[in-house]
Length: 363
Ligand SMILES: [Mn+2]
Image (cartoon, rainbow, N blue to C red; front, side, top):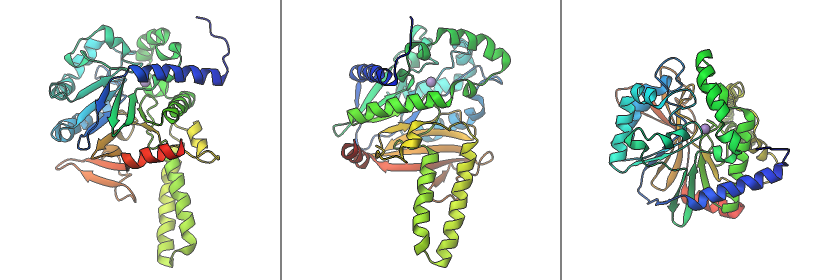
């Protein structure tokens, strides 16, 4: 395959066609008002040793599945890059994480597991080594009052070579392992994030749908990153400031410095450039159509997207021994799991009806 320079528009149109195809052939599931869904992506399960990216959040993840999502009868959507097959063999993974697969199987046997493939685990199609891999999807649609939530991993926005790169499969498995290179550094870069977000965003606008992706490891809620959200909060506080009482002014200053501190800590983290970032400051209204569940292998914790009672929420699970950021944090509700150090923070939440109305008015 010879690929010469294709202009950006041509590339986007081609991607829209790919996504359209994926969309049309994806199965539909009815989302009822009282259904509970949890969407996680990017577990990158390995062999349980030092260069297994899943290892650091493994205990937390297994705990919340077993003691929170399973007993509350949630449907579990695993949105791609579950097994890390670039670096490890299927059998190594199954041996290392047997307890976790037993949990997945519990969801599966209740009819509560939907597993989608990503670019790091697509090979599993040829190796259905576990019952939970007997039904795999490339994408699905949740239908909610005639509106559509389209769920896919996100690698489909790249060209074939970038998506299923056999060379990188070889290189990564044989050398990255040797050198102890982590996934996060290999796969998450600004350019990839920006292309994935931009194309999924354009597609969702055209279709007037919500899309939920993973792949970039960067959480998004209503097309906004945490960084954009913080900038928006700061701006709102600054507008309030001149009219506030002295006591309130003091509180606003304190709040702004807290948001600034979080913003600065995000800056030194990975996600810098992406086009959606720029979007909120140009003239186009930002359409709240793109969501991203982030990843299960975050440095400080796990992000996921919950759909409960007609609401969609970006949640963040963490161990208070490792992170206290969202404890007593304005606008963030936290919930402690009884007798543990584990907390769930609801970073953002909104009703689906409201979001779909906004999409229709703005798109
Ligand atoms: Mn991926």
